[in-house]
Image (cartoon, rainbow, N blue to C red):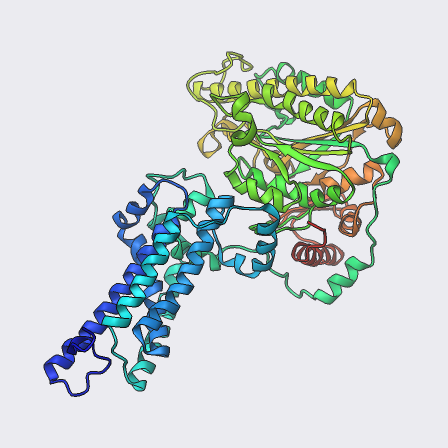
Length: 617
């Protein structure tokens, strides 16, 4: 068959009509092979999720096109370089198939898609794979994919053998490069990615992983080239940042001061009784338990970067000490790793889905290898709903007790609640408790009553947890803080009706918008070993410096990062990613030269420390 004129390696000697058909056949067959290779990549794009996603890529033609086009351009360039159709297809298959399989295995093993940034972490990924003992054995889909590539290569080797001349090949290669450059802007287009390629039918749109795979693989992978990552600050000098951090030496926590540390980030928890001029609400009834806890704790204002959402910003700023956050794709220095290096058991809980904010993977990257989510723990305790605080808080103590009675190692528990998450019902009052006196609209009344009912219940559960730790012989320190102000109606309607000032250009409005509260409580055993009474009002602090304040209060020196940033925190206790600062006791958006120097020092340290992992994993 290979001697048939259409399958010959050259059109030499063929009559003109057959020459045209010969090259049409070669071009069309190679084009079809590229389309099939792109479709094969899509067959792996959805990982272990609903198979209906594969069909959905083709019912959204733009998604299919954006995934197949890169394969065709790659094949065009490679064919221009090599000239042989079968070899061009095989080389392209290795590239496309290799990336597709890497994405498939990541989804299968970690529910995490492959992003462009991950390419530079291949070595770390290999180490993680070996240590985690993942099952990498090929499944039926992989074997079928390999068989398709092999069959395609053989068919091209036998039936598509035309090899263009050198000048034509150079033109093909140039055309492929020019077209790739021309369409690159399409793959970087944020509006197209967010709005023009929506495909929600078979996914949960709140899952970053599922949003990614709903668009195929090659398209979101290429789009991730533009994804936000940590960038060096202006004027960054790596040698200077390294030398500055090296001027501090890592310090261990003294054995006699190793207390158990339990931290709880409360979803949308804020003390509304601090608002000025809001009338007609029984604040004391809503906050009596919380105020009682504050009276026996060291407390203060926490300044966050967020409002009514973005929980993970406060969460990870506290855990890392970083004001500027990015997509964590590999092990990254954090306080979790520091506690691990000090012999602490590091674990925690979030009773919601493990894919939310990719906590399942990121918490591991930040040094908390054991984490309890709805899927692996709380669903058994709360089968009908995400676990509320009356289930979560007792379980926080149970996990603490299991460590106490098990290894007995010092304990770091990092917990994030879900109760309190908005939106709050505008038509009914879930708990039946009313805190408003009827002067506000029905919608605002219901929103506020629902929110305060949640707040009151959270404080009651927190009080019960404190009583359990109060009775412990082991020294225990509890850190509790709110992540952000809550959602209160569309366009902040309830805030407006209550008359709450949210003008961030004013001091009152800034605190109303970005401020929550922190509370540091200790049992008697902890007070004895640490020599602190854990009473009084502490300084205002930004979420990235809360751990610095805690270490300073507990008498811990910490690693070099903690020491270097503590020196900055003492001069500028509030440093936000929104461009607002507190210097010399004053809120400002315009730093003096000394303040600007402190900010530049912090940003250089943050970039260096965030990109040079130092702990054994």
